[in-house]
Image 1 (cartoon, one colour):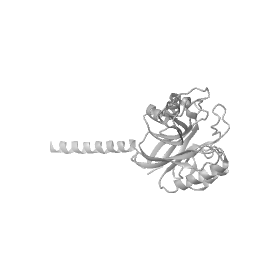
Image 2 (cartoon, helix red, strand yellow; image 1 turned 180 degrees about the horizontal axis):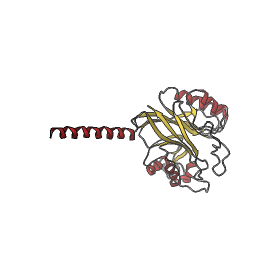
Image 3 (cartoon, one colour; image 1 turned 45 degrees about the horizontal axis):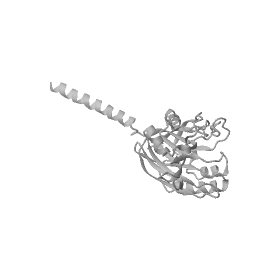
Image 4 (cartoon, helix red, strand yellow; image 1 turned 60 degrees about the vertical axis):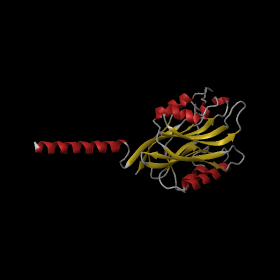
Length: 272
């Protein structure tokens, strides 16, 4: 009887140990944390058919499996073009994600409206966003640009996520890239920077960003990474760059006409 009791206790301990190990692996408590990241200029939710549909944007994100998403050209109570929606909040609600919003344009309310008209960028995350802030960047003769910075708790690993939409002229982009480098250099740990850079690979702006040593291009060496225009893309202007220790795989440009840009996504691995 005593021997049977001891055997039962040992069996329970073994089962408990394996269950705990399985739970740890399932929740990312091992040495590696995997997730999928997306960057998407959503053109305030209007597709090439000139129809507004956040549901289409949500479907693109959901189908990709992306868990951390940087969105550009996001309206908040901006105009009739987007039904005065708070688009970041709407999309986060549809996906069941957390979100952060950065207004680069903050204008007086439209006639008959109570809220300021805002336009900028957003970060959506399946995982909790611990804090965020939006930093305005130098903009010379172009609309105001900014970089949205959020700290995401990715299963115990705190990841600094930056999302930006750079200017249309090279002078502005060069200044903006340097300001982003200065900002990102003040924090330690894994980093993601994504956005519509409005610059091709090999441009002085993109090269300056990579030369900082803070980031590597997750699409480096990937051919046919064209994202704009969405119907017949011929330009590579959308990027996901990461700190050098982050591993990349399954880089893809997603075919969709839900916006005037195609989104990009990549699977990444963070080391503990």
